Image (tube, rainbow, N blue to C red; front, side, top):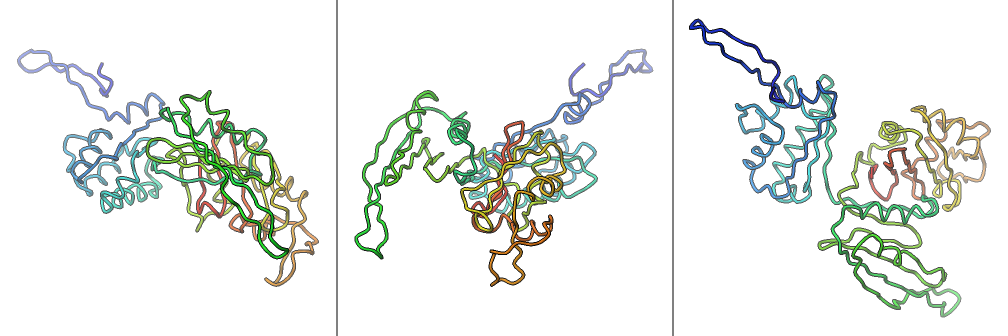
Length: 359
């Protein structure tokens, strides 16, 4: 039987001829019946016209033969009984947005409207963009920065360019002057495989020196590694929520979809604790608010500022989740929360990024 055949039956025509009739079944429905996750990748990086886009959608999403090649027809097809696949991944989205902004906006709006329809089969839309992520060093455990660098460069085509820029901090000229950084040297090289990355990941321990190590491919830089943290850029970093609406509840809405246990790292350097102080917790189920109340709050002395000019030196007599959410919001400069689940998926909420990032 053909894999896209729903049913087969035999029909005897009046002439006595036996005919085999095949009933076509949508490929998404095939996967649904086989209990498989359906994933479709749409490479829009080289799409030059709206007609080419509809041809791609028609082919890759296996639309019926009568697809009208326009946006009304697109909406009608994706909202039929089969819906969209479980995952739709769009490669080259940044280039596509720049080339065809109106078509990109319409397609994204259709996907957003689809996701907001409660009666339709859920679909996760992934826009593969070159996103940037800045991770402060205190968010990471020992050796984790190096592991993330190797992880981020997996799949990249070698050789890669690498550059180490070392700056030296000069002494103050007088009491009220600022320390000055003067570039001392730049060392460049080529890494041909993962094994040749390691020698570049040792940073100077001299407090008067500052190293920045950068890895790049043929078109752009991918990683910057320095004493204060790690900056990553690439299509494997995904913005999942704007920080305009993101809060702890929104953050954990995404995090708790992952595999348990989930490691959490909180920092309140902008509120109540030194920036180098972090609090590490482990989440075993979706009850993140209970974990904060029963495990994190006892470790904190949360200050309650009744007026904006009141000092943070005094603490509240009673700790509560409400106080925590109000006074220790991750939008405050110096606060952040990082989650790492059992499937090696990270989520990061920090004001510098402007969004919740998944990577």
